[in-house]
Image (cartoon, rainbow, N blue to C red):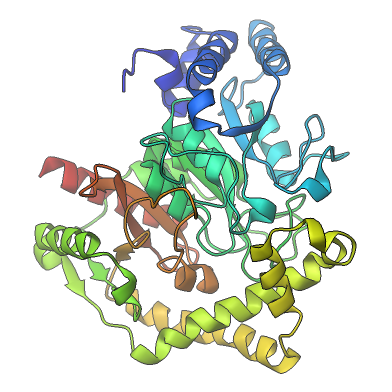
Length: 444
């Protein structure tokens, strides 16, 4: 990566350079558009991109600066938006032919917050079909024969390929952490309810999270700080004091963090190379990392997550089922059909397990700062599928914050992600712990 080229600037550095007058937003967006023109034919990260509109936004940000108006923390910085997140000035088609040409009347809350922070909404990135499993057109920037992961395929690939420094995604199972791992970038899924989901395709109220992609942890913190907060339109958000993500993430921990190396009861799904790599990482951390076994009975959690997700999807995509099921993929039809058969009693029992699980994990975090676990079973598989979310499922079910760190490579040379998971509500501290781990590994 050549950091002297504008398209490879971090969002934090770009925002500072624009505020200082060292570069203009128009110059930055032009550089990103040139990069897109060069690599998009191979990567195919964008579902909708209007270069003229992007440049118009950039020029407006530059004019605001020249006129002395207040500049937001992301002033003039381009951001990619997953194509399930509503944008009033661009189509939002949700990765399905059933929503082709759909242009919302209003921005999603997160898009409104980005505009308020001065960001340039670059365009819409490719999502899998209705943010589920059927792949879109996007390829992995490291090897076009491999998947970028899903469902936030285009967002992860766009950041990894140098098209934008920041992009938004979503996660209902593993749709941020997994593609971040496969594409070799940072991916952050915050605590459930920390970021509003208003104006975003709804799959499951209990499981849906907004997530984000960046090439630095500083940028993750910067973006998260702009998006968290109460929204009366999302019943799972709560009024709370502003979280100082940037300040906390940049601070040194008061003592070296302790990590619980959690294999999960489904460790057999991890590839041999992944097992070996995590064994070596745990060895590097020495006494700061201890293996923590979860009870084998916790295997049921994966069934609980599937019960909740598929029942909720069947309810939220009922119109698509009734009017267009023949135009849905076989994979999505199967999910919706299973969801329609879920008993109310089983659904309620599964939901009731979430607070019980979190109570148990709260006790774990009395001894550890973060859970260390794979982001995926291995590196990105070939294009036929978006990869297995098995190592994300438990943490998504519990609504715990998680971050994927691009710290390792597999035997095939593709990125191998490290996932850190924190206690619910400790999102900023998790990023601080992540920064400590990255520094420790890089020093070795």
